[in-house]
Image (cartoon, rainbow, N blue to C red; front, side, top):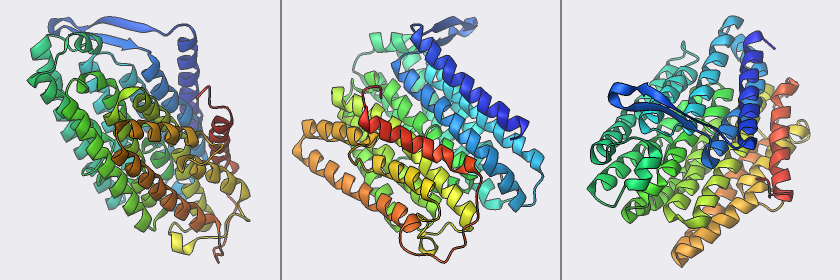
Length: 441
């Protein structure tokens, strides 16, 4: 393991431990002047919502960064590139982790906006890591344009709220905001920026293109970090959005559309990473639906769904990378029969698929229980849509796992480093543990 890889893993591990320690000590808050002339403050606070996303970014980061330490040297060797370029990817991933932590801890909208844009810059560096590849460069540019152009909407929303209420502190805004044109306009702009970041329909097109990035980037950004930032912002601003019921109805509609569009495209995709990308669009649609429904079940379900999805989907992306590295193939029709030759990988990814499909004895079983409960509270029509969505999820996930590990294949399977397998097994074990003892989760 190179020095840059060790440093990246250490940064993630320290962030994880420090977050837990701070929470155990009662949390922490920092509030100091940043730009006094503009009345801007460096305001950071660790609350329950911030804790969830910080632990995901750091905890999943430890495993993905360790996976990258074995994957990236092989990736560079395949392309005939020098080993020293590995440090550039590890540095950019550490930058993204720090940006994500700042985003989820920020209690001032201007500070949140700064970290929001830092995540976009870091993701551009990561998606375009293979800069000699024209497809990677264009994909990185597309992701940057979509997330930064829509970030302007977030900035306009911040200015509207400041002009109306005289503050950009999130807690103060929640306390003084009232239904009206300012909240309606700002809420719609915030939701648009957030949903674009989370690749929700119709702005989902950039995410499958971003699969041009190396697999560790996909496993981190597109499961536990970048796309999670969007639904985090919706959750953080939810008390404001809830003042205008039409905004929540809009979230509900977009979430259902994303579930359907992402799920159907995943059913047709043959490339492993593109299939998983489309499934991410669909899975985050569940979260947006629950935030649109609101209430206790919706709020709890959204958080648990983000947690279960991050653990499982990062495992599946890493599975796709390990399978491609072992066989040289990434198209489903050319794969199959790997369960006998890669049993540990099959078991770990099988647990991840089971939790996303909400099978019993997995953490995902409880996320769908909350999803169905929230849907039933809203109405019979949404309960029926929820069941149909779950069936669609089972179909495309079964297609992924069965297409890789069941049946027969003539693919030659080369041995892969253990660091490409054990992170998948660790995440699979974790989601099964959540199914047996869900209380801590």
